[in-house]
Image (cartoon, rainbow, N blue to C red; front, side, top):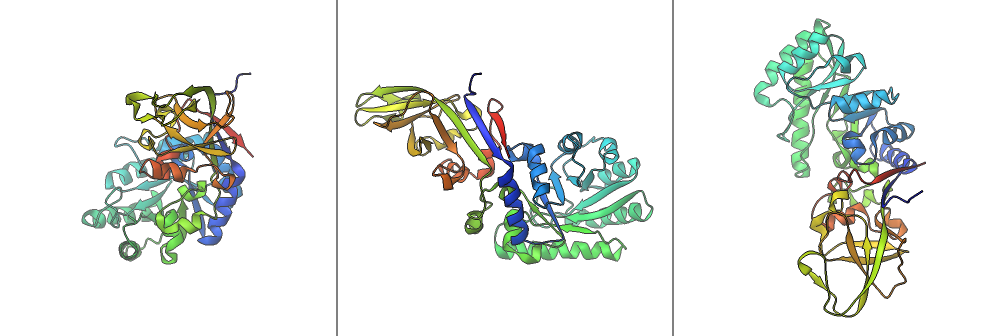
Length: 366
């Protein structure tokens, strides 16, 4: 059987250990692990199962399609979906016991028309994205309370999301969130689940944990922000992205590599062609800065990152066709991490792992 040119190994045990670690670091009544975007590129189904073994009590996704995939895989744990199409059909989601985030009166009315739904009201406390803003909060809360008391749906939760601008800003957002909870209480609605802290905020601000914390990128062992780098070192990156060396050749001094010859050999050397490029999730923006590990040694990626391949300057090292290049994985193994690639590409690790391409063969590791 031919070895796939590109492989992404995902460790279930790393996910499980990370969830256990995060629950100890940021204890709350409930811990939600977010598995949207195919589990941040790691495979939503297997990540969800590992997270639940690690102690997660909820799973979070962006949309209903993602939630239904979990249900179709036999996952029965509580699931919340919070981003909906303007003409969303909520019927199947309610039938499959998926909790629904709601931000507008129209969403609430259409959810109520189905009957029996569990709803988490989404409040914009200052992030400026999804969620009801202060100008429409009274309208939404009045309607929510009426539908709740009439038994047409259950307001089971209230949620928000911090912007992470600064500690002061996050705490100010928390005050706004508390005010919103109070406004619901004045209407006789006291949601069981109250949550606004994602990975960084949950770790940094105990007062923002309320009854539930939501972990996304941290559950995958990657850095949520520069403020929690030390904590991130306690986590294990769950993905190891490898590609095959498919050619090795000698270069003369002055020979150029890849498009536009951004790099030329300063002296005679050997280069290895690695079978992964920006179509597979290798960021083109990391051109001229990135490294990979081959046979336990880190080598620089030289020349422009191309669609299907990168070129690595291996000098006189005994690299051969068929060797394995590790693009990112656990730095404890001496290989680059997705955090490293994020730095090289001037982006965030979320952007690295969620862009792993469809040609990359996923390999689940216990």
